[in-house]
Length: 146
Image (cartoon, rainbow, N blue to C red; front, side):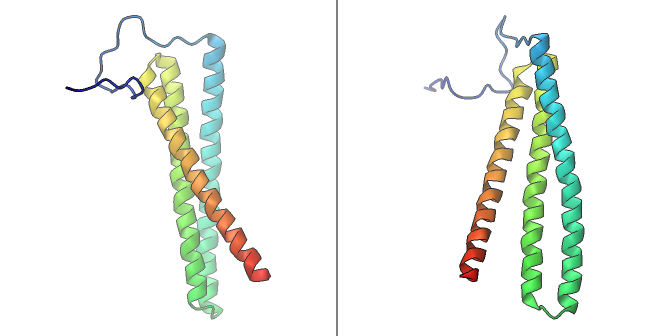
């Protein structure tokens, strides 16, 4: 016998009971729309920053090999590429969250809003990982200076 979990997210195939559609006030819809616009704008800024980081990484690889840095320059370039990929994934999730929030508000549908929160959770987890990697890098640099 299958137990019902009241905390589980609604499935996409479930029929909506009568009278449970989401209703947003005009002010609430305007606030969520503004939030979604800011999320998409921030993701575009991330994409521009990623392009600049990618160009800088390519330049670093070219100069590191000609400057005789050997393996250290390539290891740093690979680390930068990993950071670029992580930030790219986070920017994509942020853009998806903004789009889903807005779609859910204007269609009065809870499923896109739920998907938006899942994308936002993935974005926040990714930036937590990036923050921890930055902290470890700073600790390593501080220990090398001592």
